[in-house]
Image 1: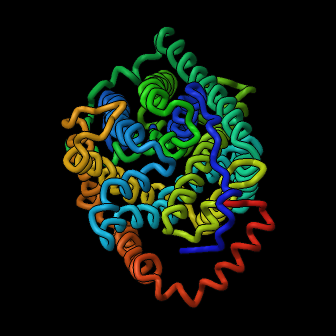
Image 2: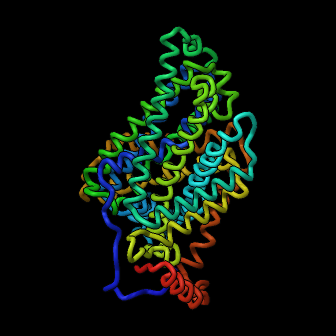
Length: 478
């Protein structure tokens, strides 16, 4: 989707401001959002027992680590921003002029309008819920207030990411430290109670373990939601210093540390609350705080709100780069691949992603958004790892600074198929059909507007006019 092109001599590029520590904190900070403070309920419901729930948390960490290592090979082999878009385009785009770009376009279509903005909306809705919870300790906060705070947070986060990359990464690092402090409080408090003899909840072990495989998949869905964000560093590869080294190291440090934090936090919950109490609670961390912190109970919702803010900040930071990369390939109007002349940030793409997220918040609720997100996301993850196997056949001699064993990639593909199919088999819902239809609907946009381009020609003068106006208003150039 072409727009007005400027003088090549004026072109600018993204700068490499993200170091190793910031890379680790981006991964951890995006993963540790609202999930660990909400998901224990869903994992326990699906797993059935305390012991099985802890195994599910550890298994989720293993699955995500293996998937991320596959992405590390792709990211070091194809050092471009845009994550899955860049890898799918590289693997399939050259195979056929017409059909080759379709996987990348469909990912852009789903990623830009479902996966990334939905993830962003969930995090900001959680932020809004917890930010006003201290003012409504004895009742449910009004929905309008939650959404007003969430929309305000979107504006602030969009401003931060559009203003300066260094500021966004600095805030991300601070928020990650704060959320690690919150998890440390949960862990230490629970372990102290266990040492004092309050170990009857954790001694339940594997009693009532669920035997239905499809229900275990629901437990995995809830656990994997808490881990999502593991692939965000792949979206900012062009801004990562020494990606061939720092990308795999960030993954191999960030995800295992997060897994340990999650398991310890769950042990902390079980030192204070029974399995039934965790399942009945709508905000496990808040209930834990009311039991353990007394007058300081108000601090736990604040910790969680800061955690959600950091996760939403990291999500928008990465999501804007997907929009940027898709526009660079012609899958969106070219203006969304433009960069701020003064700030060196992909400002138009950040604004678009924030606007879509805001649109999802207004009618959306958390449970529907999480289901919609998980189904679509694991289709994309599985297909991206499949592209790694394709590249092993089509480009065996291409340099790979990091190489994952083939059996790991095959395992991740099989796992993603299971995670997509099991919930549909167990509990088929119309939301899954809507997601599938939306994905297929991308083809009705791709052929006329991207491949054939005839339908777009009458719009080109208007696109050029809008592009020039956006360039003047935001001071952005190719």
